[in-house]
Length: 366
Ligand SMILES: *Cc1c(COP(=O)(O)O)cnc(C)c1O
Image (tube, rainbow, N blue to C red; front, top):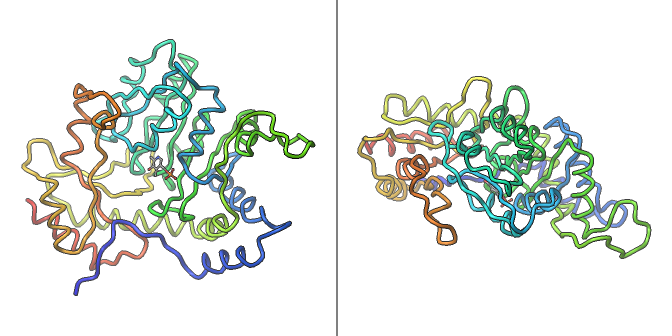
């Protein structure tokens, strides 16, 4: 019997178990925020940012961040068409409109020229999603943001371990958001983080995150505005603290796995996640993209994977193909990428033998 190779899996050691156990036993009453505060501090230090707020998800962190920027009905927010729905959905929660633009052929991230062309008087933000750990062109996006007076937000859910010119992904824009869902490089089961260097924005999100109760408000049960409830629990944060102690190891594992695939697939008519000069890729999800014009059937590869007890995943569909958006087939890059691309399994304790099985399946397609 071949072992099942999962698409992804968290790395949970005795450290996570002991911290979670301790939080379950003792993390109540006066100590009910202890692990949350510690996790936020460890994450701030890792990212080198001033402020961080742990949340129940990345989606919630994004929702609060957009609300704190006063984005609402009639406003537009620009993001790449190739994306996961979680980056676009919060835009609709605040009543604004996601404006989808095409992506770049090499990084699969939003095309800055297309962003600038899509700006209207209603544009209130640009969301830079670092897809699969690949970096958006932050210099170009920040320059566009500055020219038009529009904040650039980073969705760094997939970009733990990724860096742009020495700065960690998520620490560069007006604010950054992270996900600690079970499939992500660092996990708390479910969870997220809002980070920023902007004190005013931090204080606003802090108030919003506490059901609108301002930090200085002394009256009990007295919200000053309608806020949100997207908090992380102390037990989740305990797991997060353990993961933060192991963050370098977790990132190194992602990079080791990527390199192994890259070497093993050498010579095939495909590319994998780029690591452009000046960037470092956290390689959350190793992805193959077959050259245009080469015969390749992604369904056939996924079926081969399945028969060999391997989980593969399809590349993100263009969001504009989904039923709730209008088709935008003029986005030639987004509409060309997904058919030629597949995500490969990647998790901490994936063995060499298992990676060789994945490589053999991919090789069998050419
Ligand atoms: C996983 C993911 C999210 C959503 O994270 P949740 O914590 O599940 O809300 C958002 N954006 C991107 C790019 C993601 O990959």
